[in-house]
Amino acid sequence: MRLLTPPGRGGIAVVAAFGQTERAALLACLRTRAGGAVAAAAGAPPRLCVVAPQGVAIDEGLLVDRGEAGLELHLHGSPAIVAALAAVGPWVREAVDPATMLLRQALSPGQLELALEQQRHDFVAHLAALAALPGAARTSALAATRARTRIALAHALPLRLVLVGRQNAGKSTLMNRLLFQERVLTGPLPGLTRDPVREITVLDGYPYQLVDTAGEGGATTRLDQCAIDLARRERTGADRLLVVDASAGPTTVDRALVDDRTFVLASKCDLPVAPWPDDLRCDLRVSCASAEDAPALRIRVGQALRHWRQLPPAGPVGGPAALDAVAAQRLADLGP
Image (cartoon, rainbow, N blue to C red; front, side, top):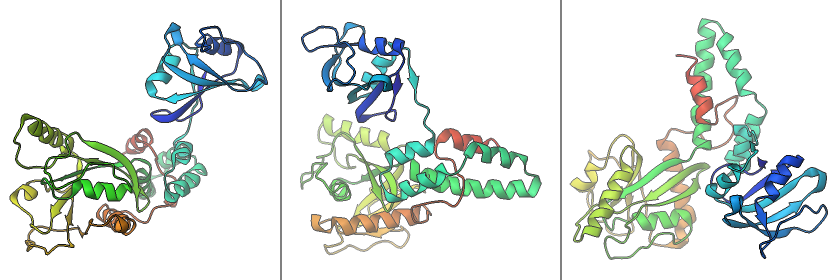
């Protein structure tokens, strides 16, 4: 059997079986809704069936018999469901190169353009060519490839960006505006965010995993303290977006959250603002008061984050580049 959709979480997974042995193995995992066996029927309309590997029902799927082109089973994309089918075997995963994977999963025109560019290059052959270059030429070509790779990986791999700050600084409101939806509960009551909330979005052409967390502040209950502890674990070693309430100004709590991987954003700038100390940088000042301003806010935040990361406008990188961690490590193994 073969997984036709990209591995990992998804709304839908499509599994295909081609040879007679593989078709029989897939059909053995299926039952009718009445509990009977499912038989192949080329040309028959798609059929709803129960997915029951090893006799245990785990899902419902849609079986499509394409005759000589094989059987297809369309089911929910949970990795656990796909893994249960994989345990039945025989199982073959479709070999998908990183450029094709990025093409399938592209969330922005920039990612799409990069994927199309990289499909025209053979990165393995490029690595071999780099290894064969002499001295200075090799050093120069390696540096150029690594520079392109830094940008390409920023396109392909979402940056995990943890929103941090004091309670009621505006973290959750900012996240909702950036996502164009009321994903996180907001309000004047402090401590509304408890468990970390994670969502993928694209800002100025580059993907981010935004993580909203509980704010620093008074913990009046054990539940409040657990939420703050979760937030502290979430931000350990992570890139951070510090949200500071500009109407109150930075405090010692805000300062303690700043390191060299922190983007500092002043929120609530529609209100009268407090003095901002000269020794604390501010990367962007915004107002999140109105949902109608969300499109412009996304543009401003995305551009500011891109400049903070020292990235060019999203799109092609001008030559072969690594698009995943495995290829990047092979490039690193070529030496300085």
